[in-house]
Amino acid sequence: MTNGNTDPAQQWSDLLSSLTGQRREAVVAALRSSAEQGWPADREAVRLLVAYANGEIDAQDYAVGIVVSLGGHENAVQPQSPPPFERPWAQQLAEQSWAAPQQAAPQPAAPAAPAPAPPVASLTPENRLTREEAVAAYVSGRIPVEEFLRITRGVSA
Image 1: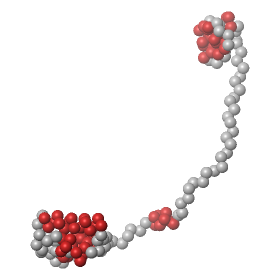
Image 2 (image 1 turned 30 degrees about the vertical axis):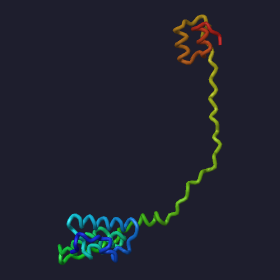
Image 3 (image 1 turned 180 degrees about the horizontal axis):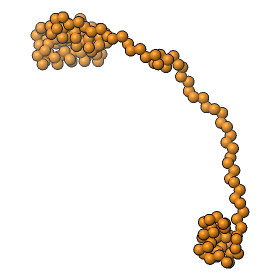
């Protein structure tokens, strides 16, 4: 154990030398916080923290290493990483080359010609239909709008 008054950046400068920038600042801040809370780090804990910060070990290896360094498990064995899960489909996807979809040459769309309307003839002379009969004849499609207007409003189109 070290005395809590020593700055970790100076005390462990040899172990921290592989860290730069934000990683170094984060590790030193963690070591200072730990010391302020009454848990000053020893050399092995700093070595493990630096290895974790550098990506040399994963979180599980770091945790096991800390427990072992504290003497929590005398016979503890650091776990081996399991073999990667086989994903044959992932390999196939990785081997496929992606290409943007090709646009097909635009086909000229045949304009939909409206069907010619059958000629609508008046079944009765316009003066013989009442308004109600004209409405029914127009709605049923028996007379065109022009004739409907002439009958109902006296308007010629």
